[in-house]
Amino acid sequence: MEILHANNQDTDINLVIEQVQAGDKQAYTHIIRRYQQQIFLYCYYLLKNQEEAEDAAQEIFIKGLEHIHQFVPTVSFSAWLYKIAQNYCNDLLKRNARKFKSFIQYKLNLKQQPIHEYTNLIHELLDQLTLKDRQILLLRSLEDYNYEEIATIMGLKSSTIRKRYERLRKRLINYNEKGGKQIEHSFKPGR
Image (cartoon, rainbow, N blue to C red; front, side, top):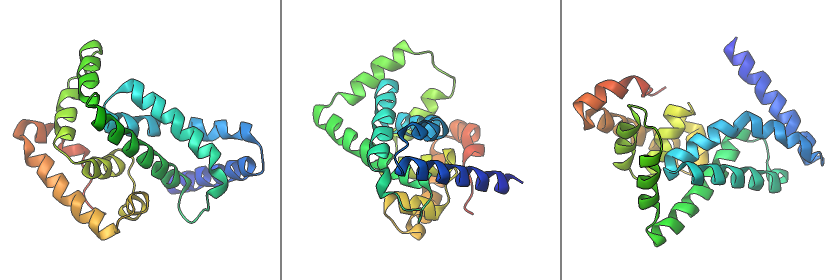
């Protein structure tokens, strides 16, 4: 029944996409409502800053609207939207790296925001990863994309994604005995 529900959501999104492509820009609000939280979380874990993630999510949806006429349903709409998010966040991280301000802002924001008990552990673990590994982990563990969808988003082979994910999963579970036991349940084994 869950698969049927997912197919209905995909059908609904495809109808909304057709409406937007036909000129009904107001229909795009349905797309934003459907993917807003997912895109924000993806950006937040990549950028490590709530304000930058909120701004990035807005920009990603604007770019999605501007380029929606280029969407062809050979991949899922969410994968297409995540590809835009990946490109946008990569560009933003490159700009921030040149300015060396991202890490300082992250630390300042962390002091001002209430911290969940796992937040420091999650950020510590994510800091140990390369950008590509972080993206693979987030798309697989948080968004539950399969290897083929992640490969489409990242422009890599699905076998490469599978191998990197399994190595990454083992590395993070073994990273810290205490942390590994607390977060082990969130890693999905290969399907």
